[in-house]
Amino acid sequence: QVQLVESGGGLVQSGGSLRLSCAASGSIFSFSIYMMRWYWQAPGKQRELVASISRSGVTNYAGSVKGRFTISRDNAKNTVYLQMDSLKPEDTAVYYCNANLGLQDYWGQGTQVTVSS
Image (cartoon, rainbow, N blue to C red; front, side, top):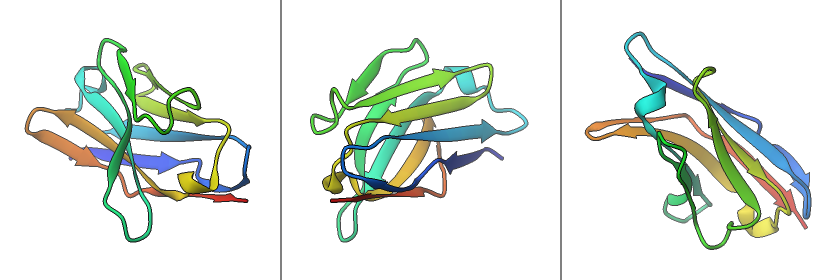
């Protein structure tokens, strides 16, 4: 069984920064070969992709966070990060970590990020 555990969420003022972490574990889980993604879900809205990083380190971002958020991974620690700078109130959401390899798809429980104006 694969487990993803997010941490680092919290309350921050507009313009501030937070760093989210997602630690992966599992007896047969080869973290380094998985596509890792961060999603967010605001109240009353659908879950949306924020950023992704491939096993080779190629990154992609949603337009609304490009230039402000940075996704990275440490395969030695089985961890993916989301550095969030210049935060805005509209970034307020529950942030979820996702690990995907074809039909193998795993989710964390989410971590709340609240940005006050």
